[in-house]
Length: 292
Ligand SMILES: O=C(O)/C=C(\CC(=O)C(=O)O)C(=O)O
Image 1 (tube, rainbow, N blue to C red):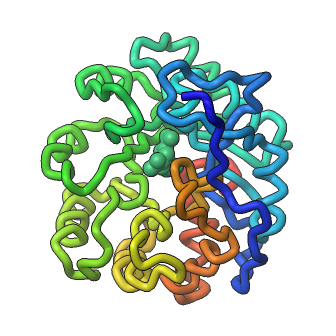
Image 2 (cartoon, protein in one colour):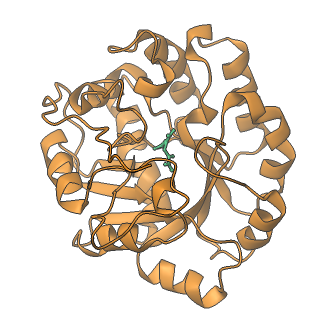
């Protein structure tokens, strides 16, 4: 792997939709810059630099106020690039770390000091070599009480994930709703299974994100995504947070326009009240609770 990849739009449109004041892009990443923060030797993709300067310019362009930077798999368990993004944000970013489960309690405390408020367990085989559930559970028990656990898996393994998720000792946030097949519609088997997971614990949250990934075949404007996801947001409105997923790792063959991604928000959260919860109140509870 030597060629570096660009997976983001060079000139995204300005959205038609205006997010409320204080809106948080609660799922995005930074890549590098590589000269300062090299990628992991185990990285499954090698992106061009997409550093905090680009991320914050996009934040302003799209009308957002803050970011939650999620450590991407290309940086492995070295969180330096993400911590740098948080550090140079002037208090406008916090993060989610990916850690070696053998991390010490002192290192966890340092991550908290650096603005991390959760860790991510990634179960996608195309992104990570292994996902040891027993070790993940052990480290989960050592997290600060007010941290949460972000998990990323695909719908085909939801059933085998259930016992692990049930055992997690912190609030859980599921990335991209566990990647349901949105073409099945709001009452299809994947959405039904995901709803039953949400019903199994009232502290399982989700990100109704990534229309570009989940409605890839139909493409922009991602109508299947809007139809399947809007009822979920309406029914679980206190348990969802939203993000752009910029710089859209692995989407180089179908790069989304970030302005259009933002314009999905009023289609899945049609009222001002739902938008306020999705973009402000809910993510503030997880990332800046001291300000509430
Ligand atoms: O950005 C996302 O959430 C999804 C990703 C990339 C990713 O998670 C990672 O690299 O850690 C994907 O499906 O390729």
